[in-house]
Length: 164
Length: 358
Image (cartoon, rainbow over all chains, first blue to last red; front, side):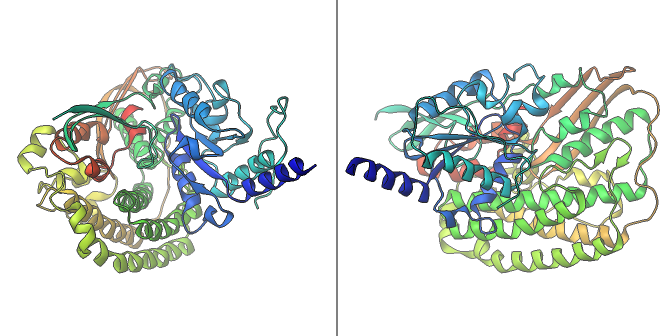
């Protein structure tokens, strides 16, 4: 079928140049500067075709750091809904996973998955840039497979995997 | 002329953090700026009531990932003041070394973001490349790149051996060399000066009146640095506050550039004079009393108020962060400038939203 062939080609092209959107959702900045460090010469994710964009409409990947609270949860949901499908979400850092050290604080609802579906969890406080890049690659796996409506249980966390 | 309100943030490409400014503009000129905060508020101060005072050190380190060690130092100094603990000299020097490494990486980080704010992306990349070397030193000595977790009440939890001391000195010489190569670009480049000179001018009278702190205050000609009070080992080291007189964005950049050299010099001094001995004194009993402690962070003066009632947990911890003190300055600087200059002026105060909202 020609349409299937085209679909395969598009999926392959998408993985070769994923654009990512980074949102700081109540993080302590530790994870944010590690995400930014991924873009700079030492780790340089641009060699994989990954570009950081500021517009959710351009983005394939959403990188979220930090805990969700009542005020920024709305912003996070807005950003996620604006992104065009197919889209994948990577939650970064202990806070993004579960609330981390702030879990019992009064203004914290919990991890990112309380608000939007998360595909890959990257643990660490903060995770090393290598772990973040590994998480992004796991998310790209998800992007390269054909989308199914039931395809939502999260991938296994990055912990225990060797760095790329 | 039509007036319109433009929301700057919370998600935007200039800052990695969700700071929202509601900008009222007439054509392209700002007439009013209103900060809308609370996107990062977690309620850290209230955590003091259900955490042990030793565990609280880890929480204060996560007030802000960029100033982490200095928050912990300030908190621990406060508790040591309440409990009457004398910190061993070696621990005081190690605190200076880690504190200054943090200032070094924070200023390099800021300078990169500042360069990015006026579209100088190659300079951003260069500065962050240098910064990675500072993070390597942090990782080698503390075990983590960003949040170190080495500061404890009564001292520090990790020591350095003589080999590491030599290695750090070597690495810092490389960092100093690299910074010296970039310095003329920041100082004299025509484009950078056109984008930053005369933008967001704060006079020394205004700085005093608005209660500005840190490099923002020093760039307006007021030589005030909390390190001069001689906490940790600063009383035994030689340094002078770096100041500038112009009070504009370029002057703030120059002050931070001077502080990079100053930090490298302070670390060299501390490494040379590093005394031997214990790294932690014994902590006995529970704290009772109250204290106010001030420490100089990369962004300015942080104030901790701590009250303890003799229990396992503290009854109140109040944190006044430098960005909180500098937000009135920002609100004063923005009216009258062009919308296109907003990123440069906002970044010139080095806003740390995570600190600000806690």
